[in-house]
Length: 184
Image (cartoon, rainbow, N blue to C red; front, top):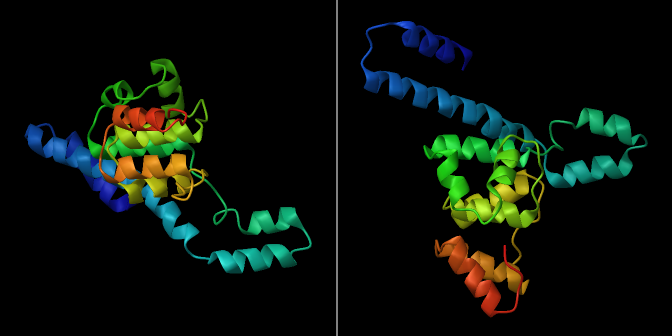
């Protein structure tokens, strides 16, 4: 990966490249950054099965030692980093995504700068704003340390239903309100 990034940087320094090639190179670099920040962590985290980790933890006499040995396996991605990478890869502007949220604009940018840790409902708002499908939404919740949507929970079932049908955040909140649940 480092070799490819070096080639991209060398190409960017060439003064006579057409704009569409420069845009393509920038797009490729963004993909590599996204891959490194999220997918490389996925690969590391998938090396050990949960059952094996549970067994090791149960048999461990020293928690600190266990955590040091399994630091790459037991970790979360900061929600702001995860969301920023998704926004970059999607090609959307942060301002476009933030405009679709039902939270204070300043707070949304603080989340994206990793200054604030949002609650689960704010993360679900980002799922709607980014038009994520249910698998992407569940993965985002899991990777960032939040509980997945649980369809046996009536409120979660409504959110799940709305995401699978690619409804807007407003539609989801209307449906939640009609059923007597708190808004996202």
